[in-house]
Length: 623
Image 1: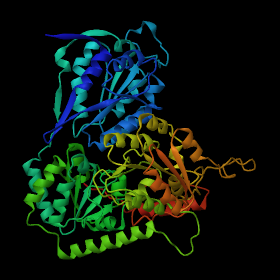
Image 2: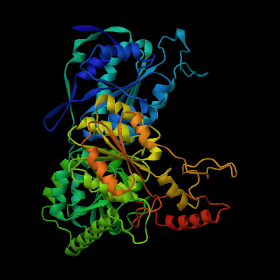
Image 3: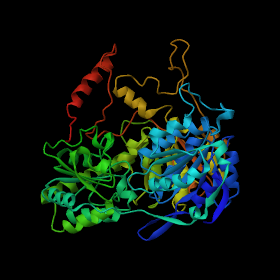
Image 4: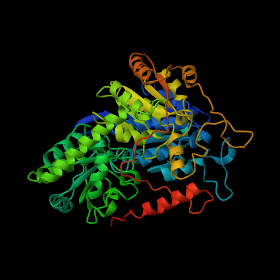
């Protein structure tokens, strides 16, 4: 057997360079490179190996967590057909990646994490940044990755890489099992040499399977749909990941079944498709939520039925409602007592189109769907051009969203993650093309937005990427603006300055807590609370200091001009606008379960608790 003598780290990088995936006859090199920060725990191993492989790009970031965000967004935009690896030193560098790992796993996105680890030969322990345990020497901070990884391993000997790497690729390329994969790499083992079999480094092509449903479950699903008079589809992220938008469009045009979209599935249909009812659930539209309330058969496609999708199990109120779930993951297919159809979304939709060629929803349902859609689109137009006669304040958030939508092109990407933005965008953004709406809402991780936008742009440089974020999340991790300038990755950032945490402030007020601790205020000497003057931050100056072009807009007209300018600039551009958080987008007959204090001295809290008890009566088990 031919062998090649390499360090463990050199062998790892050489292997990663030669991994490819194939779907529908198209091959893609799987790994686009490595993101990270070097420290003593990876500089002599992974760092040296990357220096030796200049054809495998290394991108240094400013925070290890943001590296994982960038990688996850890249994989999402690429429909999981490409990925990045992320490397860190040991200790704080490694643990900085844990939030990102959880986010990737929750969203079922392939990311390979390569944190440095303690010495395998323990004579020098405890090493710098090593956590110790009095009960075992076989533990380190990287064990914290176990519950947030789909696969985890620690490479104590260089030859263990030979059996670990195929498992890594099996998980990363699985439609049902992918997520974060962690290989903990002891810093001494990274630098150790071994005679690796040459076969390990040959080009390998991993097939992304389009799973076929079993005939019994499929026939039961067909029977259930055929019997439905008010069916509704819930389109989740699996529609986009399987590139099933065209198949979905054909199926619903043929049958007339309306579609509500989850955060991950938004854009499964173009916004102006007759069957597109828009967002569903706690952040849903009036059209989707009305239809969900009376649906007799709900067809979930690639959704895991998170609480926002089900409005905390209050969305589907028909006492005889039945569910059909189409999903690559058996775990998700069985949820809500559904008929489980385990298979690829596009494959199953194509088969349903053929099997239900003679099925149409009733004529009265067709009229109801059309009326609700027309009513909803008129509501979006109203909120995009808010002109209440008695309102004289600064622009409201829905107007900013409207201006961004009008400035964007048909293939451009809108990206966000946390705060009040996901709810308003889920309702209002009119997605034109698949993956044009990019929302990280499985983990709703603040600070995802800027590195995530970079990942989306790297995955498809032909599309403009608009980032929509608030001042609260911006202050958590603005430094990746510098990385975007360093790498020539231009993104457009619209920063809404509402002087605090607008989303959680609104939630606090709805719970009777008056927005406590959610506004940016100076601490008052008199009260001892954060209720003094408004804290002022110059976001324009901050963005400029990080290398971006920055523009301040004081009204909608200036915002629209700034967005025009942003499209012509040569690097990342930040547009800052102050908004009024007191005027929000309505809830449209939806609800989200957030527990309210059962006992309180505050009358507002007591009133909120009474409303909460009443709302909980609508929660249902679906068995």
